[in-house]
Structure formats: C-alpha cells, structure tokens
Length: 133
Image 1: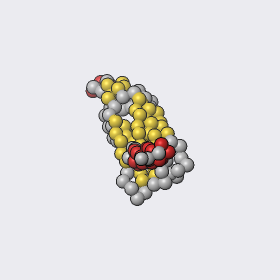
Image 2: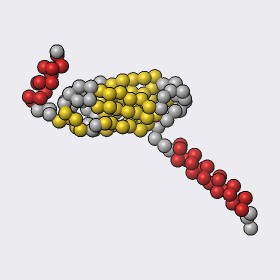
Image 3: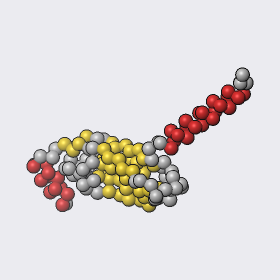
C-alpha cells in the first residue's frame, strides 16, 4: 500500500507533466482586433501577444492588403504585447494579421476579418479625395 506522501509525489509529477504538455502546445501568438466592424476612414487597434521564446526572431502585424509594421525580436527579453492603432482604414484593407517569424521552427500566422462599412462608389471617392488633402 502506498503512503500518502508517495501519492502526493505521484500526483505532483502527473500535474507537472500535464502543465508542461499544455504549455508546450500553447499558441505562440494570440491576437486582438478592436473594433471588428468600422466605417471607412475609422481606426482599428491590432494587438499581438507573443510568448517569449528563443526561436522568436521577428513579429509583423497589420492588414494583408494595405499596410503592416515589423519589429525584430530578441526572443526572451522583448515585450509580450505588440500593438498599433491603424488610422484611416480604407475600403478592402484585407484581414488583420499577426505573423511571428521563428528561427528553426514553423512561423505562426493568425488572421482576423474586419468589416468596413460605407464602401460604395460614393464613399470610396469621398475617402480618396479626403486622403489627398
């Protein structure tokens, strides 16, 4: 029969194994886009949260068909949160994205759609005209 101390140790070993396995399978990047529905010309905040890891070499975030920002990463000492507010969103900017470049491992890419309202012919023309000023 096992003593209570042995059972506690076995339980802690199982718990540590489960925690390690879940941490190893945790996503390297999570993403928040706010708001997800806007009027053309409005602002959207794109936030990427990165788990620190030595393989992380760069992060890029923005909109696939419009603009983006890239930062080089040191891996273990960089900030956990990278964000930017993108102003004056045009019609059809493409999905918002976070892309984590990793050394020796597969890159991680996350995308979230953003619905841009007011993109009929008149709104597109007015927005383009205001953009020139």
